[in-house]
Amino acid sequence: MTTPAAVGTRVPWLAVGVFAAASVVLSWLVALPLWLGGQGLADPLTPLVAAAMMFTPALATIPALLVERRARGARAVLRRLGMWPLRPLGRTLGWSAAMIFVMPLLAAAALVVCAVTGIARFDLLGFSGFMDTLRTTLPAGTELPPAALIVTLQLVAIPIGALLNIPFAFGEEVGWRGWLLPALRPLGVWPALLLSGAFWGFWHAPLILLGYNFGEPNPLGLAMMVVGSMLIGVIIGWTRLHTGSVWPAVLAHGAFNASAGMGALFLAAGEAPPPTLAGPIGVAMWLVCAVVIAVMVACGAFRPSAVSGELGPDPAPRAALSA
Image (cartoon, rainbow, N blue to C red; front, side, top):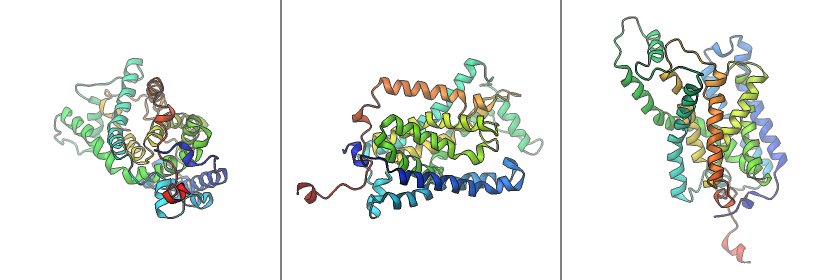
């Protein structure tokens, strides 16, 4: 296993700037129809725009790689972005599979925080809030299966949703954790994780400033997105540093998105907790992530030996190394 120095001894700031500018400009261009249409998030195009935005970080890696000029050839590019080779295979596949379940567990823990603190009331027997919502979407008089069965099927579908989300999650992660995090790695583990997470949050501005996620179409909503992304970014980014691969981060991102609506399954009828507190990336999730990060630190997850996955381009050939 190589050391983090394989990424480079200096941050390629020009390439970072190009990546940042390209990803932000592209995200705003994709979201422009929502701003010009006058309907905001109520626009029927919103799901399509949100999905298309997820591919802009991947597109932004193209000019960044050209400016960086370290990864030459397809093999080196794949290695630079953490796409290939899958080595160590067991660790990469293991963490990829684990993150499919870790992220929903974090979402569930955030719901527990909401219940304990009184942020929201839940109905774990009749699932009244979810069933009321479901009835409003179906023709009157439609017979529904038992609530517990429907909720169970929804929960079982989360890992499946994580897999279906792979193309979209990859569109983001190949930029954030594939290219940007290793590019910032010379700053140190924590600065790289926090800065890449902060930019990930800021990149969401075209949607957040329309009220997405928090219902706060203002700087407060954007600031909350940045903080939440930094915290979640530490956890997701750690998988990249630990395995040297982007795929665990891709699966983590896909699973996080798939579990975003989990709270709606358990809410009591008439409950509408503020998304700033109970949303998928609200304050309750912040607390959960902070606890998880603290436990990871205590367990030594951020020791140099634990965050030294291969993050650079192909190493020099053996003959050249022995010269």
